[in-house]
Image 1: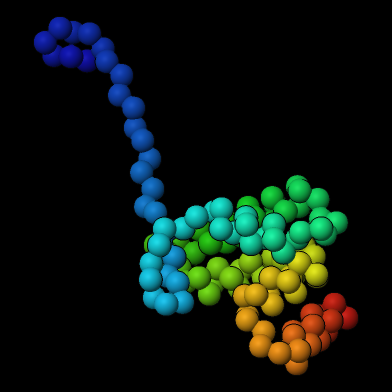
Image 2 (image 1 turned 90 degrees about the vertical axis):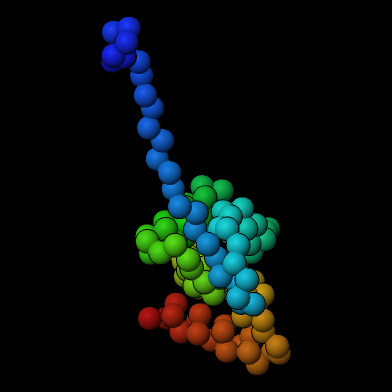
Length: 124
């Protein structure tokens, strides 16, 4: 209440969030952007029979894991690993597509090693 005139006034509180910083492989830092994860997953799932709802759920789950670390900074490597964990559960082909770019496969043998790991995981 205003001491001078006696009228009531309203105040609003705004929750201020601290932006999450991503530490890139070259040690540069940039602010976290959900759109980069969305783009990577959409590219990996391109022409795959994965419903949009599942893609959105995976992106939400990834973002939840990233923010649940409660750190102000996270490495792009850790984000990539979290994305790969989700893609492995979402679609095997999308996982391999993402892994081939993320892990920078240099030759067919490296690619085959990743495929064999994936196949071993499915047999368990």
